[in-house]
Amino acid sequence: MDEILKLRNIHKSFGPVKVLEGIDFSIERGEVKALLGANGAGKSTLIKIVGGVHSPTDGEMFLNGEPYGVKNENDAKKKGISIIYQELSLIPSMTVIDNIFLGREFVKDGFLNRKQMNIEYGKICEEFEFDIDADTIVSDLSIAKQQMVEIMKAISYNADLIIMDEPTTSLTNGEKEGLFKIIQKLKGLHKSIIYISHMLEEIFKVCDSAAIMRNGIMVGSYKIQELTKSKIAELMTGNLENGSIEKKDWCYVDARSASALETVHMTGRKVKDINFQVRKGEVVGLAGLVGSKRTEIINLIYGVDQMTEGSIRMNGKEVKIRSPKEAIANKIGFIPEDRKNLGLILDQEIYKNASAVQLRKCRKHGFLSKEKEVDFAKEGIQRLAIKVNSPEQQVKELSGGNQQKVVVSKWLNQDLDLIIYDEPTKGIDIGAKEDIFQTVKDFAQKGIGVIFISSDLEEVVRVSDRILVVRNGAIAGSLTAAEASVQSIMNIIFDV
Image 1 (cartoon, rainbow, N blue to C red):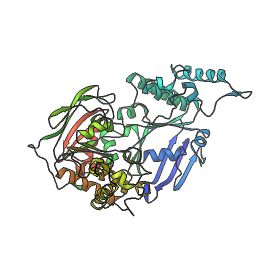
Image 2 (image 1 turned 180 degrees about the vertical axis):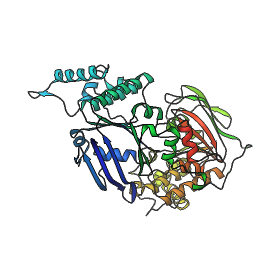
Image 3 (image 1 turned 120 degrees about the vertical axis):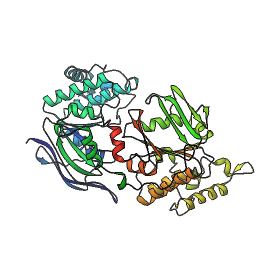
Image 4 (image 1 turned 180 degrees about the horizontal axis):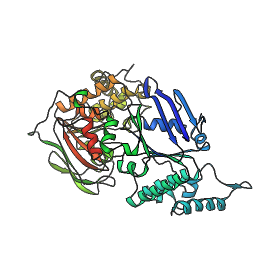
């Protein structure tokens, strides 16, 4: 066996949180190997360790049979490992060729040698059948073309191991076929590829084998001929049955409940023909893998992105929501996934963050009253058991779980018809999660409709009255609480 990369007993922890436990993984020269797992399985952490972003807490790595230690991403590239991340890393204001050779430009007599850069770029385009003009500004390209530039950039390093993280997310069918041809060509050049994708059709088309992860452990490695869609879904979930998940013992909605929200043929740049309803007091879960476009659906409802077709109805009446301000005016609350950048002002005090969307309640004689802001914050601190020294403490000094509770506290006592939770338990401890789940129950009990998104499918099953499964920017299926399990959700995701 000609192993190019071998990982042995890799562990990774972030503080007290164990992310990877005892991972064994290997890939041979010229092999295309899928790395599969549900959201939170540990795939991203593992490839970041290989690519020099993180260091393992414990374990050994070998590259070409020799011990492999890596200082950073550039060090990994110098040693022959290149990663194409799902999130684009290009500089939009620069040209294609300048992005390709950024940080390793050709220089002659102290000056930039653009002629040689163009020659090298031409060689890559000819060999791999790329047709993107070198001098095009990246921001002028479609997202699909930008993705192809990322692929060209990785290839230009002449790496022996290329890791592709969801490389086809933005590509058309024709562009996907072009990528598959590139993969076959790289394989013919004895390059190795670790291929991460939730599109199982692609896995069966381009991969020789698959390694499957679940909850930070490596379930096993299999020849692609040994696998089917249903087998992969079972291995990724552990074939969890409803009985292994704590089921909700409360429900505040029935068939007679009025509609809080209804989307009618709602369509945007990244989602299409979205039709669903949330009744008053109902918790509707949106389940799907990373890249399924769950958040993009929410962004249309909340006015972050604009609809190209369709409509939104609140309480049976059509409304126009073109901004978050208009969403709030229509009694919609939102707890965003990125709490640090979108949910909080980290350098400001807790009381200022807590009262941010309810300033009209914190006025006295027409002026903003610090006393009322602090009182409002104190109520949220008490109700959500937020651990603080004082409401005047800066929010950046709190733990992740307590920061998240501050985000939730902004919407307490607000006159709402709908509240949206987007990954509300991401990066917080078990105790804080239970407090967040309690707020979902409290909102529903008041007759407020709830949309709940989480990459942890067990959480979605636990809190939802109904679950909509999202795949490729569309609703692929619906499950009642009685029908829902991790396995049944995964079966719809993978179209088993």
